[in-house]
Every structure is written in structure tokens, then in C-alpha cells.
Length: 309
Ligand code: CDV
Image 1 (tube, rainbow, N blue to C red):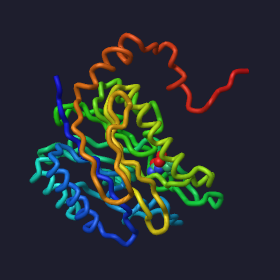
Image 2: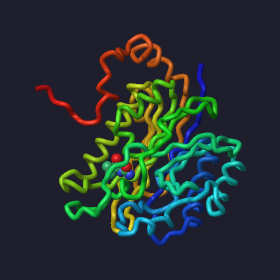
Image 3: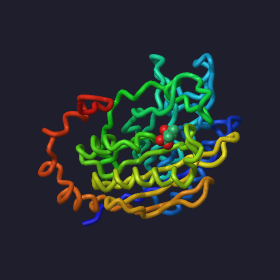
Image 4: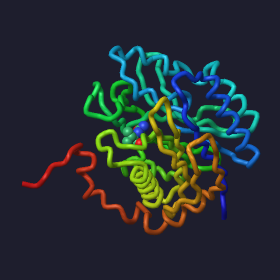
């Protein structure tokens, strides 16, 4: 049996501070047209796809960051993307900064089915970075200043013929992210990322090592939960701040089946057989037979390390 979902991983090159939503949406539409020509069913864009990676900019008054947020989704500036997706009969997922009617701020992503309906929303849980200006860092990463931790958990949705879940950027480094979705039978995890190509804490950790950690994390998550992972970068030089590429698709054996070269706008299209997830789920990672939850209590009982006496 095979159950094919043809996915387009749609990398965006850099988005400068001065670029408008309309300009970015036009680029996203161009990628969608390319994906349609390559017979994709589902297109995945990066984290904070509509704007520059604004959490690198410090504002004393955090409300000054509000213009980077979307108070509604879709909204008039993003509607052309929804219209194009409906015209193409294509599902999509993209990240954006969400401002709720109650005034809450989240780093969010949505899942839109082929009828244009928003069927799922995810709010980033593992927010990296810091709250206050940190002069010891080579660059600021103020996600903890501008966003609250997500409050929706890690749901999985039955849509487009499969079981699909989302996470965002730093979430991909945490095994708990995949396992919570794995326990819901997830068949494909889609995620976007904005990863600076040098670690702000240690300049010796550059592009090669950043890409290594990225691949290591998503390949392990895919293999250990026997699911596809689609990881999509916003890449390149944003106003002098470099983000790595590394947009890729990983199969349920943990193998990279396609990886995009370069840091510009571009897509890779992969026909993903969702039934290929069955083998791992029914053998070595048959959770019902093999998991030993009586030994996993520490994972939810504590946050930090507790060393033995
Ligand atoms: N946007 C991110 O979440 N970036 C983090 C960086 C700060 C390490 C990442 O995990 O790629």
C-alpha cells in the first residue's frame, strides 16, 4: 500500500526589515506556483514567514514590536496567499507572529487544508533566547521578550489523508516534541526555522556545526517516531544577520531524502508515502509494546537536572 502526500518544502531567502507583507506574500505565491507545477499537494513555509526575524531587534517598550504581529489570520495582506492556495487546491503551513484579541503574543504556525480552511494552529513551546538586552551575546535573540510560551500543546490533525503535526524551529531540538506527537500516531511533522548561522554565545560554533545539529535533531525525531519530517528555513542575510539554510525532508527511517542547496527562495518537492511510517511504528517503535512509562516519570516531574547525592 502507498498513501502519497506530495510535499513542497518552500524555503524563503532573507526578508529585510524594510520589506512589506505584500512583497513577501508575492514571493510565497511564486513558490506555490512552482510547487503546483511540480504537482505538490501541500506546501510548507518557514517560521515567521511574513516578516524579517524581528526578535533580533531590542525594543525597550515591547509594544513597539507589535507591528510585526498579525491580529487576524487571514488578513487582507495575506489573503492573496489563501486565494492562490484555494485556486491551486493546495494545503499549506506557515509561521507568523500572532497577536490575540486578548493581547497575547505567540510565535505560531497554522495548517490549512486544500479547501482553504485553517484546520490547525500551533504556538511555539520551546522559546529560545532571553528577555532582556544581553550585551554578552554577539546578537540578540529576544523570543522570550516578545512571545509567551505556546499554550496549545503538540496536537496532531487528521487532514490531507494523513496525521500531521507542527512544531517551530527550536522545538525540533527537543525529543519531547516529536514523542508527544508520536504518541498520537503522527505521520508527518512540519516545521519552519530561523537559525542564526553562528551561535551568539560561542563564535566557534559556526555554519557547519549548526547544520549538523539541525540534521541530527530532525533525523533522530523522524526515526524514533517513524514519521516524515519537513524542515524549512528562512535563510540568508537579513540586514547584516546571517541565517543558515538546510531546508530538507527526512523519511521515517531518519534519512534525508532531499535537501535544498543555497539560501535563496526555492523549493524541494518530495512524494511522501505516509504508509512508509507503518513499519517502524509496528516494530521497533511500537510504543504500546515497548515503552516503559514507569521509568519515565522524571521527564514530566522535573524541569532541570537533579544530580544524585
Ligand atoms: N528561531 C529559533 O528558534 N532559533 C533557534 C536558535 C536560537 C538556536 C534554533 O533552534 O534554531
